[in-house]
Amino acid sequence: MSIFELITIFETDRERPPESIDALLDFYQQKYIAGEIDILAYRKIYHYLHRQGAVSSHEFA
Image (cartoon, rainbow, N blue to C red; front, top):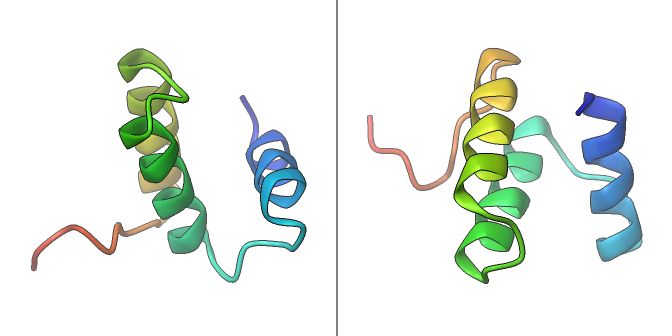
């Protein structure tokens, strides 16, 4: 899955672009928690976005 596909899904669902790559990660975390995506898809998305510099609002420093 590419960053463009991830953004398109976000835009379709939220009817606006994500404010940041961090917001994109938080969006997919919410989809996982809601049971809309499975753990394998979530882990793949999480690692991909994390490599792009995304930081979850749920991570502690």
